[in-house]
Image (tube, rainbow, N blue to C red):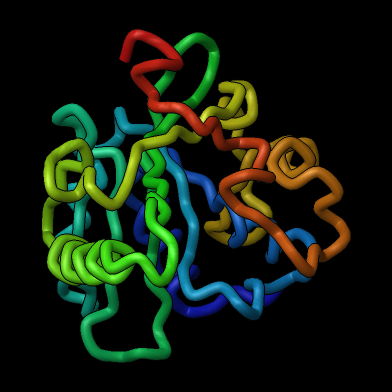
Length: 223
């Protein structure tokens, strides 16, 4: 199994601190199916329990010292996502870390879904909306802290949810070195991707991923 330097570094750092984490999504798929990260992936996908956030915050200075900017995203006043953005080396991968909580037997985490343009060409408002969306993205995607339910971010996005049976993340194992994954990772990949063993030429992440619910978390449960 081929593990790149960013993945080895961040998983080792988190394991040393005692954080309960797992490699997730496309990163897990690539490592299990291909023995390496997916060629088209530009980030490292990871999950952890929100209860361990204080442990994670202890390593953030080390993350910054290693050349990353640390961004956080919040929903209803609770941080649910950290992004570690390389400051200088464009060949380094972004680290995308979701913090999961428990509700009704499921592990859940907010997920941002970009709104489509409500207008069509050649309507003048089509181009105006596009310009507004570009500016909001440019300004707020670089924000150190972002509350995703606040205006004007809500003009261009809505909040959906990761919604995964809790059992998948209850027991973790190490595939190799510090590489923590769900113990039933084959079943988990089946839940997420269906026929995960076969690469899909066309994949609609928001519509086909079995772990996504296209509904606001507040409408899934009283959260």
